[in-house]
Length: 150
Image 1 (cartoon, rainbow, N blue to C red):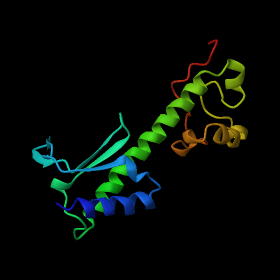
Image 2 (image 1 turned 45 degrees about the vertical axis):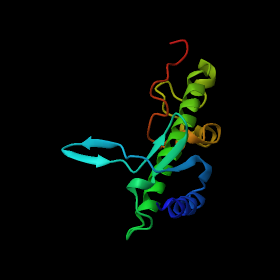
Image 3 (image 1 turned 90 degrees about the vertical axis):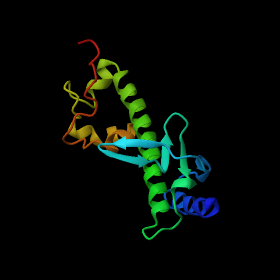
């Protein structure tokens, strides 16, 4: 097996993406076969949001192929982990927004959930993950917000 070279590729990519390589496991197990449309595919890697770990299957990956397939696979799974982390922080921020009193809510936001333009900088500072996926000048920050007292 080429576990060592796959681990080396995982280390290279994780360093470049500022991701803890200790959260990446290289395994050599029978690949899971999944049906996508009319095609049967074997999974070469996966990210588990319950554990925060990435698993790269050495049985289904050739190290440093012509397109650096393993590095691309690792980057793809790290992107899943990073998106999951961002989604979790955004959910916490949205919970904090929903927990605001009516007075606290209406200072930075209009009743419809849109930010007050003059408050965008403060909202971005107070809830930094939310603006990373939301254009605060044009979109509702927390569409599920129930304005307290209404």
